[in-house]
Amino acid sequence: MTWPQVSWPGPLRSLTLRLTLAYMILFSGSIGLMLAVTYVGGVWRPLRQVEATIREQSDGLSEIYRAQGRDALIRALERRAATSRGRLPYHVLLAPNGAVVAANLADWPTVRGAEWVRYEFGTYATGTEEEHEAVVRDLVLGGGYRLLVGLDTEDLDEREDLIFEALSWGAGMSLALGLIGGLVMTYAVSQRLENINRTARAVIAGDLSGRVALRGSGDDFDQLSATLNEMLARIEGLVASISRVSDNIAHELRTPLARLRAELEELADAGDDREAVSTRTAAALAEAERLQAMFEALLRIARLQSGPRGPMAPVDLTALLEDAVELHRPAAEEAGQTLTAEVPDDVAIEGDRDLIFQMVSNLLDNAIKFGPPAGRVALAARRVDGAVEVAVSDNGPGVPPEDRERVFERFYRSGTGPAAGFGLGLSLVAGAAERHGAEVRLEDADPGLRAVIRFPS
Image (tube, rainbow, N blue to C red):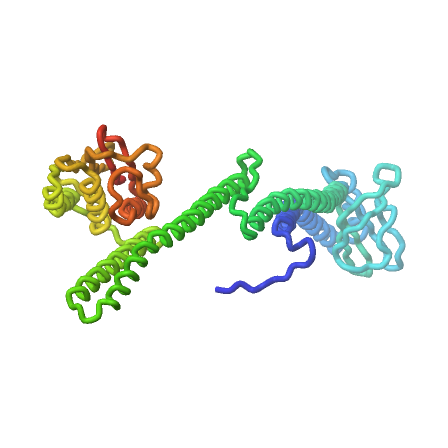
């Protein structure tokens, strides 16, 4: 799915500022919604109740006028004004010619408009003229009389003004403060991002040693920076490893290619000497097979380190280790060595059987190759804290502690023991162990070396 491209103008290109504005709008909207609910409950509903009361009272007064006449209506209006409780009652009764018949208001709409009116009336109910907000019903009675009946709603008017004032001030202040906070936050975030961008540009320029500076706050940016630094360190290590591997490959290929070239040149000079041709051809094929084996080992290691993880299945480790011992027993006997195995019954793990067999086979091969004549090679397996450990040990010269990490590098050979092989066996073991989430370590067997693979439970 391709998202549409949006070109934001100027400062709005900052995601932080856009998010701040969005939250400001949401916050202002929430204030407006809250005040709207307050308005409905505190103003709108009470106004509807006031209108219902006025409707009931005005209908009663109209009925009095219709049944008993004008004088009875005037007396009813006076009683209403004298016996009121709660909201102040207002009334005006006008004759058909506009003359005032009865009133407790100082002013009123001179021209009749809508039936219901919210109006600021003057009143002298307390003896002095006062301004009050009121809701009034404007009716026309029989004979052309005009009756205005209302109730005081000054408290509701003040409440309404307060709500709208709070809405205007609250929204304005929240927008202003939010904008200032958004600009400050945008600046702070942009500085942290620029720190990351600066490091990234340095790495792009070729400086793999660049790292993002940490502030020690432990915040999200520090955690992101620490993760990026780990990634950069990993990349730097991989690039350095690739460089070393490239140098090692060039070095390792130089000798077999030179030998292959020499064999082919001698083959070309052999002429009709069938014995010499046969000898040179066999030697050239041997060198070609050696090169092919080296490249196959390199490819397999590369696939282990970069390829997708293959399917894992239950592996009978007991049977696998016994098969590996039987495979290498003839080579051990030929070298005059003793090969022993100590494997418990019914040991099973999850993994790739072929890879695990290759790991164990490589370790046994190394132990036999580097072990002394009439020496001993031992394979053992055990359960430790829910994990399974497989160990191969010998009593050969061992590996110095300073070389025990490097022997897992491609083409690296320790200074002890013979120089046979490519120096790729332990690299393959390390790659296969990483594929299984296993740990490989080398220990001192006193004398000799112990290689341990610890498979997780």
